[in-house]
Image (tube, rainbow, N blue to C red; front, side, top):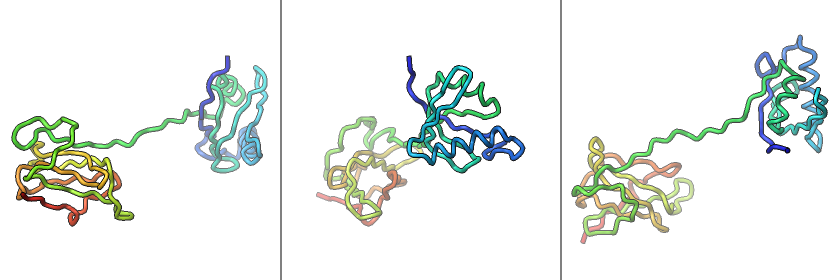
Length: 196
C-alpha cells in the first residue's frame, strides 16, 4: 500500500553545504541538483530494497540542502543508502499571536458574546481602513479598552463599510488602548463620535 508523499529536507552531514572531503555525498547532492534542473524533477535512486522515486521540490545550491518529496515508508531505504545525510521532516508553525479580549463590558455584563454591538446614542463608531489603499476593511475584530488593567471595554467586528459601533459607556470616554488589527491600522482620524 503506497503512503501519501511527504516533504523532507535533505541536509549534508556537515551543515548546509556538503564537506569537500565527502565525495559520495557530493555526488549524491549533485545528482539531486541535476534532477531539480530537469523537467521531470523525479529521480529513481537505487537502494537495497529496489528503486526509490524521489521528487526534488527545491534546492538552494548544487552541494547544498534539498527539499524532497517521498513516501514515509521509503525513508528507511534512503537512510540505509545514504547514512551520513540528515533527513528532516518539514514542519509548519503558526505565528504566536496574543489576542486581547474584553473581560467585562461597561455596565457589568460579560463581554465574551460574539454578537454585534448595536449602535446606541452613547456608542462610539470606529472605522477601519486599509493603510495600503484606504478602502474599508470588513470583518476586522476591533478591541478597545477604557480600563486595560481590568479588561473593561468593548469589542466587535466591522461591517461591510469597515465600521463598528462600540458601547464604551459615553461619548467622552477615553479609549486607553486601541489595538491594531493584523496588517490594518486603526486610523485615529477615522474614528467618529456619534451623539444623539
